[in-house]
Length: 310
Image (cartoon, rainbow, N blue to C red; front, side):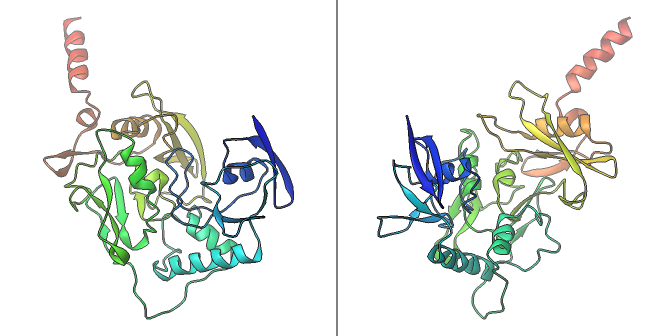
């Protein structure tokens, strides 16, 4: 069953179970959102997607509000724009001003929306998020100073039963994303699958194996499917100056889990000069061989045995 509503003066005819945000997207209207992801539970935390609905006394989050027949919605009214600017300003006030060197530049949603609504960094004497950077993993960089607490990393990690590594910890302005009992990426049970990195809208979680390799505007990318198992997760192969320089995971939709073995397999097959692989052994990352990283020892030994018997 479909319903018809009006969004910013445009008619939209969409399924009745759609949210306003989904309906807006159907007719080419992008409602800003930092915590929303179509593959994750809706939490309406960032409040950036607030809209005005005629006949309603309060603003509603478009990511969680279902469409109704005849509904009239305004996504860019003066009141909405003012509130979005306030939210973005508060986020920037707690954010390090290093966009020029951040790996996420050009793809960061906070950067995108701050530009869209002309919100800038400003000097102030208030608190800033702590400068806590976890560099213990060769696969993921975690920078708490850039975290906007959208919770997308926590939600996507919790979707895999044997993971559930990430969680909110502390309270108020001290709230942060922790791994297990406040462990590092190295000492925790994190398996470096990169689910959290893929959904992070800012530079708080970054793929270390792509850092310094290419900025979004410097090269090209094409999608390949992982061949390590039946899930066939999607990866992007990044190409700069005709050299395949890196691989990065794409969103794990349709129940695809993402895993380190698949990512390394995709790297080895597609990248011209892949970085050295690492394995976590006893809570420590150790450089290893490709055979051990991909679990190929027994297969290669069997091949060698067959070859010696020919």
